[in-house]
Amino acid sequence: MKLLESSVLIVGVGGLGSPVALYLAAAEAIKYLLQIGSLLTNTLLVYDALDMSFRNIAINKSSDCPLCGENPTITELKY
Ligand SMILES: [Zn+2]
Image (tube, rainbow, N blue to C red):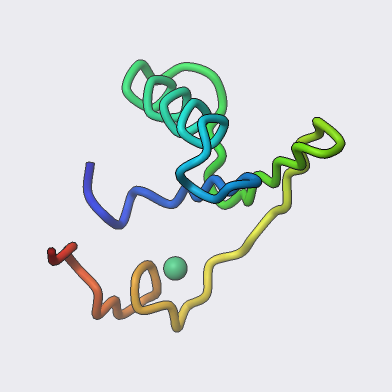
C-alpha cells in the first residue's frame, strides 16, 4: 500500500498500542485487502472505553498537508 493511500487513523484509550485499537486496525486492513465493507477513510474513530462507545468524526484533507496535500514533501517512511 502506498503511503498516500493510508489515510486511516484509529485512536483509543491507551493509544495506538491498546488491544482495541490493534483489533480495529487489523479489521480495517482486512476490509481493505478484501475490498469489502466501508473503510474509515477521512474519518477519525474515537473509542471511549469508559462509556464503551465509538464516535466517528469526519475530517477533511488539507491542501497544505505535507503528507496528502497537493505538493507532498513526506513521501516515504524513514527509520
Ligand atoms: Zn494529510
